[in-house]
Image 1 (cartoon, rainbow, N blue to C red):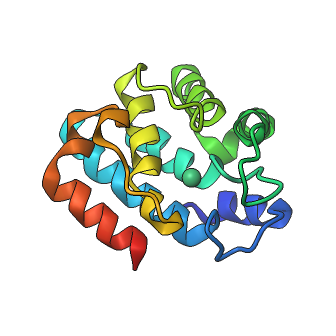
Image 2 (cartoon, rainbow, N blue to C red):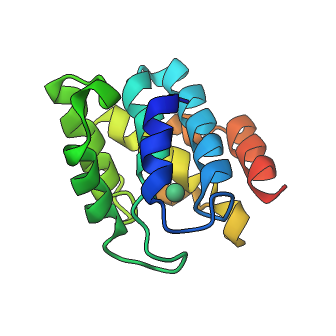
Length: 154
Ligand SMILES: [Fe+2]
């Protein structure tokens, strides 16, 4: 992961760094997303940034309905040098972060890959992801689905 960005995010992160919405989760989301992106052409840079940013503005580990919106706003405030993203990538990223817990499935493949990468890690909170709530065929692929699930509950 990008060190400079991680440092900025960590400085203001309110929850446990290694908690259920902390860095071990982001690492698995990154891995899930990059694995899918290699197959479906999703943008790697957006997927990586999503992993670090999507839960970065949580106030608690519960439902916290507005954390996606806060995460998107935080993303827009970050220095461009930290993100190194073009305009289209930034739009994809902020959309993905803003709506990642809204249960949506329709979007650009990069955004869908971000959402699926997060959903494939639900095992850590005792939830088996539902294939019909995943967006991409890559996430529903039994091999990846199983592997991601096993990593999530470890
Ligand atoms: Fe997440």
